[in-house]
Length: 65
View (cartoon, rainbow, N blue to C red):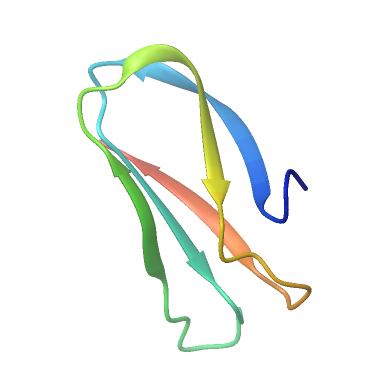
């Protein structure tokens, strides 16, 4: 938690495209929604902040191409 939002980091590869998605329920069918898309990552550590975070359950996944 950072300033009323949820923040997390992950290691990234240079020039990869990343899509960060979230869902509020993992029961089938899961409805993933895009939180952020990053094109041509510079590499290093990427920090993602979810300003819509609440006390409700929220699940995240990171897809890379």
